[in-house]
Length: 134
Image (cartoon, rainbow, N blue to C red; front, top):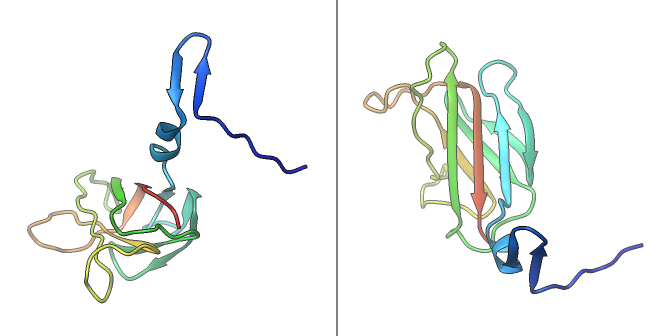
């Protein structure tokens, strides 16, 4: 049986009341834990349809459901690169054609040294985005 719950607030017996807009607006719409150096897979995810390997340290995470606009917020946390160092930097929202963020995917690039702009695959990284879905 399908149904719908309509509420403007959620109330806890111990923590008080929360407006539902904070739950809707403040929830991650996309997240992924992925690996690009060992088995090149998305380990766990929400709203990710596929991962594309564009070369060393360069991945696309393609969304199952697109964002309405490119003004969503995203963040990435690379944990360790393929040679065992944890000094991995950068998330780049650029697409292959330039022009900034896209509503349908994120381009994630990881580097060991941001001064050399040499890509490094990571053993484990996390990505999350918040915003309105289409």
